Amino acid sequence: DAKTTQPTSMDCAEGRAANLPCNHSTISGNEYVYWYRQIHSQGPQYIIHGLKNNETNEMASLIITEDRKSSTLILPHATLRDTAVYYCIVSQRGSNYKLTFGKGTLLTVNP
Amino acid sequence: GAGVSQSPSNKVTEKGKDVELRCDPISGHTALYWYRQSLGQGLEFLIYFQGNSAPDKSGLPSDRFSAERTGGSVSTLTIQRTQQEDSAVYLCASSSQGGGGYGYTFGSGTRLTVV
Image 1 (cartoon, chains in turn green, blue):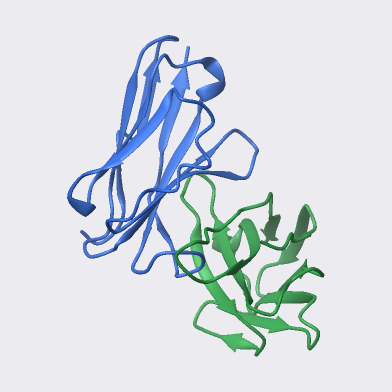
Image 2 (cartoon, rainbow over the protein chains, first blue to last red; image 1 turned 30 degrees about the vertical axis):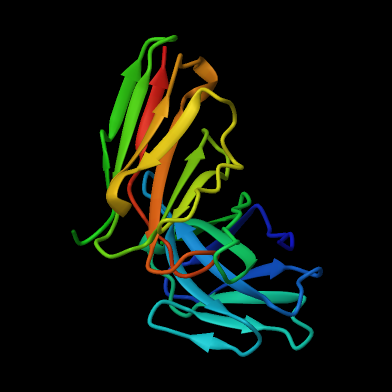
């Protein structure tokens, strides 16, 4: 699986958009980009995934660059409850592949 | 059940003792994963079960670690002769399809402390 690079930490003001970047310059054509988050003392939670098109769901939006070498997770209106470690992962789909979690980005939403 | 259930939520054991950690996946989920997370670290893959296929044990750190999944449902992770470096949160996840990225649902984990 391709390696990802994320900032160690970020801050965001409550109510503002949080934009979390992820670099995955070695991503291959059949690898998806997945985002999970982990709130303190809980297990990780799936947020969103995409292949090459931008995706949106009730939690977030995922913007993938045209060359697919980087992506951005957008939380449109961050709340204090969005304070968590956010993991960007690239992986192929299929029975031989498992998700490899890095250290992620600690997002702190400030009042 | 509605989610992935893990028990116990906390376990303190003496060095050298064996421990068993239990995971009840979401009903109908064919894939089950074990990860562990040491303090301040990312998640480390341990083992993966998919249906009746042979499990992927490539992440188990030593032969003191083993896991089984009975009847394609409940899984038990066993650590024999525990060491202090085994102290971590052990997380279980399940998904409706096997393999990377099919929306894992994680449990809340078992916090293991070896003293």
